[in-house]
Length: 560
Image 1 (cartoon, rainbow, N blue to C red):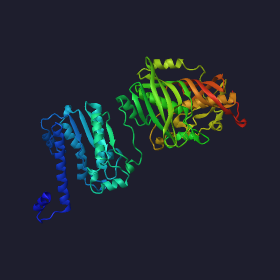
Image 2: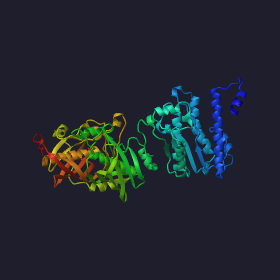
Image 3: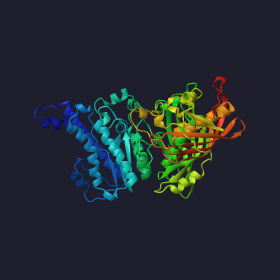
Image 4: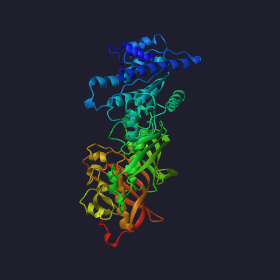
């Protein structure tokens, strides 16, 4: 009654409008809440003061702090006005951003090096975006990043808590916001749950960014919940920042700097069109050479100051079938040995068994594995290259010449589509083998192996996988002619990559069968050379497994 009488006395008309009453009542209840909170703090034997100041006014904040030493900050100020950018005034947009950003700067400037704990109350809108809240979302996202920066680069333990709307208090209680949240399937947070989350993060910590929310309904329409990003060493971060590199690494799951990492990639025809051209009976299979590319990418990311030298002990095991449009796989890479300028990284390609409910069960499935051989970057690579050349198989150099059979002769017998037709035709038969033409990625009949390339972006691969594939296919022709079977690769003893060819080079490939093993396995050595007869890459101990007899009408004998 006292409040009502006071308002009536101050009014010229002697009446009080509903808006005036609500504003005065909220101010009164807020003051009562502050008084109760201070009393509760003091009842525990601690001291508390309340100062009202504009958080964007650094002078006012500094005056309120005075000469106190600030060791902790909780920045919870915020303004919000949900309107499309086109309908929002610049002054409103500016103020909403400044309350968050300038407010933090004003608070932080009073602490300097004494700050040991910081918490920014941000919003799920900064993580997921929200209609009409471009300014609010951007400001909160900046504070999210600032808390991560503080934790990474100072003694301060900082965390950003991205809140959903709180129940009964805060912004979400204004007007019809709670009803809007309910219709969108967005759960609000009970005060006691929010307090528990804050206290847990303040006392335990260990994270840089957390979400305090239940179901986000329409806000999470893209199912965007993800694990927190890893902090990468500077050299690794610089390597992965190149948008052209590492197309088969979607994210890093774990990292032990310089020792091991685990990455994840989701394979799909949509993002990786080459899969549609490596299909059997309409089912895409992830190619072995692209598994080798994944191994190379992960090894070079783990040890970024190195170059790819080659592979050893490659084993192609359980095939990766893309049965339901997409399949998520992981690469586990671990440094296993070093010797002078050389390093060996053991890589495994694995996937999880998943039931119809999307639940993972059992142990991960091992598909392929290999050791990746890396050589440290150096201005003079001559000693390394000379050593590698000495290890090449002694099978001679394929001379140039006229094609004996066009590529159509080969792909009448192989299942590969145009993005994987890396064999340019047969030059000749030789004793125990075949000479042919090897095609680089940009020379394929269809060159967009990745969806990014269809969008005009450049993709760089590390392992020259199409030239390795040309070696596979050339050796397969040799086995097809000599043994009468179609074959698939099951392993490689050793390989080297000596150089990246010039774009216009005409590359030749030679493969020679060097052994026959039990169970239909043939062993081949392969070399790819360029215009000047200098070797580009080589495979030793390429093992092919017979899969089925060549139909009678597709058998052949090459001229020698």
